[in-house]
Amino acid sequence: MTDCVGIVIVSHSPLVAEGAADMVRQMVGDEVRLAWCGGDPDGGLGTSVGAILEAIDRAWTEKGVAILVDLGGAETNSEMAIEMLPEDRQGRVVVCNAPIVEGAVMAATEASGGATLDQVRRTAEELSPH
Image (cartoon, rainbow, N blue to C red; front, side, top):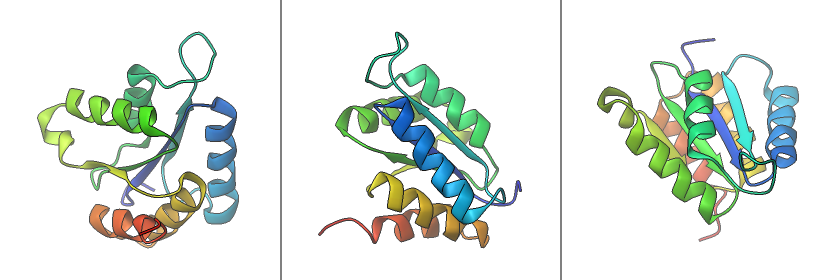
């Protein structure tokens, strides 16, 4: 399990994040470390930098972590979380510009085959509208 890029799903809604993660597990299996977070600390819609950092730790592997986000605030908080990581980890965590559900499934599928972090990111981003 640890030789694959990890995947983190960040949504403003914990139910969306959990549902997307469940879909990834059902379609890809447990080969890839997968973590998710969503909602603000009070249980409302939003994202939390602290929760994103914890999700990165749960999904962490030496090959890195790809993050899939739903809206702008999730991207901004994910970038802030990356900046707060120890320097040796910062370059091994990326935010993918991809649809959250389809991107997470494709990223996890690519990761399960042993792809690099850049290959995982590029595969997820192939789904982005141009």
